[in-house]
Image 1: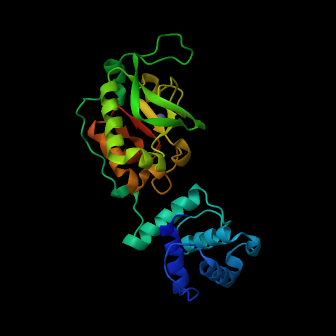
Image 2: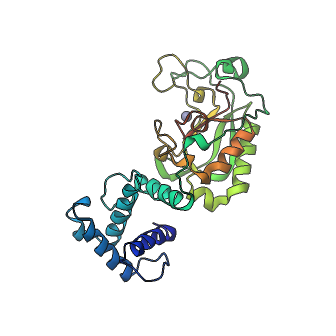
Length: 278
Ligand SMILES: [Zn+2]
């Protein structure tokens, strides 16, 4: 919970007549006392054991209820801050600020393709054969592209990686993309947004749920980032990379012709590829 979120809670408590102190974004005794009063007033709408929760947990529980009262899915009202609550808090802030929660329909991906990336059907003609899962044939020509910011490995965040594997035909473009992301956001913001959470690059395999079609990862022309917060079947209502903070991130990829499945089809928001969909 950041200060903006606590301000939202304090404003709500004030509306309900439980809080008349400063809207300062700090959880002090008066805020906690007001949360206690408000939670008492919610009766059976909140779990019966809430009085045993810590003050912080009660505050989060109150926020979760507030989100639900605006028809925003905050998950179970349990007072724990997880990805669903984080999403709901963001959506609530958007709603209060602009009157609406942004949706996928508000997104217009760029059509630019300055490097002439092929359609998915033409990737073998353009990039050559894909790699094989059993390594029975050589992988495509891969190049290590050094990143200006270090990546953390999604399945072991303590482990760092300073490069991405790229097909030799996409390597220069990838280097420009990474450089521009770094220039735009800087390392602290990249870390805050989990843009540096690496979930996959070259990986010869079939597309998920397909027996025949090879994934674009098999050519070393696709990347996945922060898969935990951008799950395969999640749409823009849940995926973290669909939020406005990531608009510049996607614009940078799209200016080089890369395609986000999230931005074009509202699924697999972790994924970006150097092949066009039609
Ligand atoms: Zn992917």
